[in-house]
Amino acid sequence: MSFSRLRLFSLAALSCVAVMAATAASRAQGYPDHNVKIIVAFGVGGTIDTLTRIVADKLTEKWQQGVVVDNRPGGAGNIGAAAAAHSPPDGYTLHMGGQPLSANISLAPTTAFDPIKDFDPIVFIAWGQDVLMVGKDSPYKSLQDLMAAAKARPNELNYGSLGVGSSGHLATVLLENATGMRVQHVPYTSVGQLQADTTTGRINMWISTLGGQLGVIKGGNLRALAVSGEKRATSLPDIPTFQELGIPLVEPSSWFALYAPAGTPKEIVAKINADVNAIINEPAMREKLNNLGFQLKGGSPADLAAAMAPDIAKWEKVSKSAAYSAQ
Image (cartoon, rainbow, N blue to C red; front, side, top):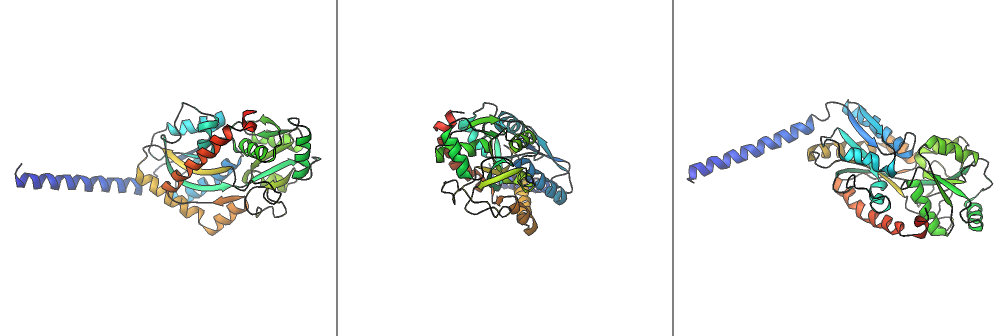
């Protein structure tokens, strides 16, 4: 090839790269130009649904485009996650996922999708502080009361959750492993029904992330006995932490993060990441979510990807425990 031809070829290649870069930048700059959907793999009214709707409302304001929440409960979170994973990778279908994505690899494996390969991480939004609750007329006035009864009558007391692999189920397994108590699992598909049955005492105890249950606790229908975390919940300052009560449940069992189907343009992922980070760093937003028991994180897509490995290992260990095997 002559020098002149080589030079022309190089110029053409550089021009092509420049056009591609400009197209990518333009694609991100114009995003979104219509409604965006966030799939939640659990029902309406739970903590992940509450958080997603708060974030979606703020994104709607920021983008001047509708951001809608699509609840797809079932299969320990696998049904909704699979629907999101198989959506077009164009940034218009996202997934609010988290702990079920890493836990289900060992606790509720599925061939419908690969939680690592089929998603591009966007941003780690928050940890959710857990709260253990009993009904308003429960005879158990403290965690010590509840533990004593459960140990005296193994598997006679029960607990509710939103299904195998849900944060409430797994948090209770962690509690059983930490204390030696054994309680019977009763899975639900409806948050409202679980709230009602716990209120009346049909369900003896329930661990949930605080954000979705604060209103019911404040209203007096459910009584909080303990919360996870190193510090008491801002919104429940009179309720002790598990750690204060001598139980090593410091780290919340549930976390929440935004994902896109694998192959979503990196420029769009970067835009969503930047916009969500900006939203959760607004002082009013931080105060609101902290009061709901969320410990905000933020960070890069790489930060979220790095958080998956230790969480997968954590739940793999739980899957081999006696408490989980008994479910």
